[in-house]
Image (tube, rainbow, N blue to C red; front, side, top):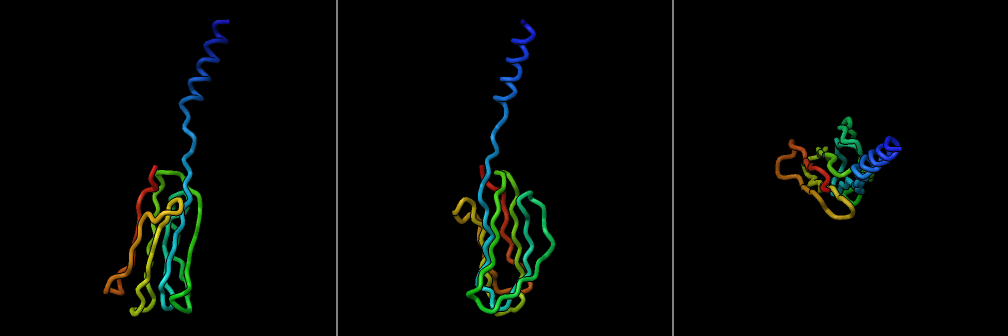
Length: 120
């Protein structure tokens, strides 16, 4: 009987120590590109993806990607414009609020990079 009570107590303590996953909605958002860009990003597991070329016909076209990720996951979004006249705007939203943002500066050879760790 003592063994059964000890086992039940041990299982109850182990269950109490587990934290539920703190999942957040992440949205990558890119706009204001005149002719397209190359985007590199991390996915819901924090894994960096291969560069993806995106063609846009005007500044009005947008690129976005949404996924659920656990708090503490690294988010990373890097965008390199294809034309020097374009000033691309890059944003990362977490749970509907702007978490990080950036805009290309005067040097068209440098990418716009925004990154961080999803807050708890």
